[in-house]
Image (tube, rainbow, N blue to C red; front, side, top):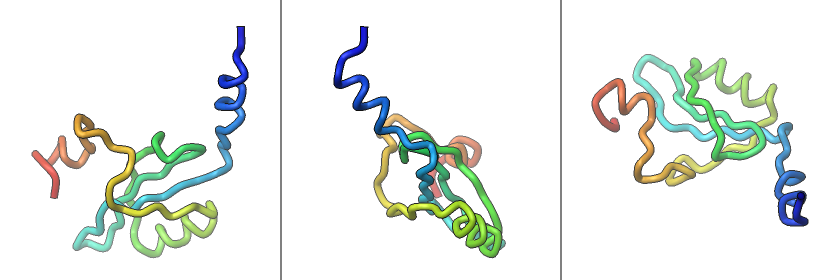
Length: 88
């Protein structure tokens, strides 16, 4: 059985809204960022050259989010942190 709150929450998800949060810029010219569809909390970590990143953002018509803070809990770890032994 569906409640009114459940239907409001289900309809609020918009898979056509796209979000980007820059998480780092490397010395080799790559931009590290989170890309999310529908909700900023559901994201994939990505990396592109600066030119490719700017083209990607323009093509996808993303909403650029602030790089500080965000939906990460104190218990979450970024892939780069796990692979490189800690935050940069």
